[in-house]
Length: 131
Image (cartoon, rainbow, N blue to C red; front, top):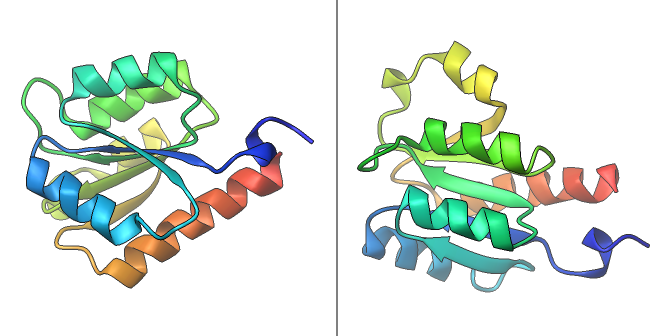
């Protein structure tokens, strides 16, 4: 049994708006994950360096760095981590950029709780199957 299968999946939520982070945590609090959060890309990168993060769910429009830029750095540091983007601007992001960064799914804001939970369940199921 590997370390990853012996613990709950570690999910990092990244958004520069505290109320959005709070809403995401509320939505996911009863799900079988350990939740971490970061209010900036710099904070998220510090978490990535210090924690064995399995899934990163990042907002796209943030000061200093976009969610795609953050997820590109996540891919370099934690290539096995599943990357999800959440944004109110889905149509403004070129699909080829999303694919290039290895973003598994783009979730639209405002999100539907059931759809968000299902996206994370699929991501964590894939993690478990990869071993």
